[in-house]
Length: 69
Image (cartoon, rainbow, N blue to C red; front, top):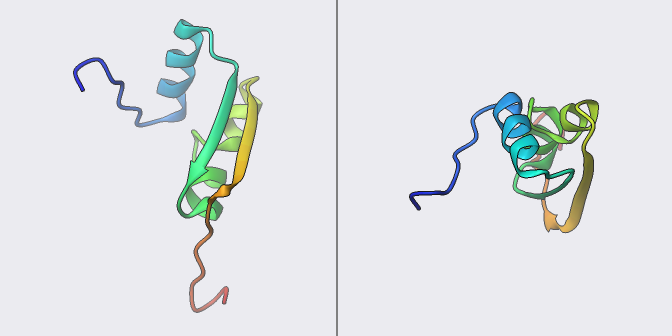
């Protein structure tokens, strides 16, 4: 959509949230262990920037590999 933002980094997400007054971030999605936790826009990085982060457990999944399974 024309007015829908596309976020590529934690800094971009931080600027967007700051402009809009957003302080609570809900995380849902696929590959929680890599994308939601370890990225610079993930839970821990955004907590470090001062946001309240909530992982919606029923709306996420992890990914196993041969080494972790």
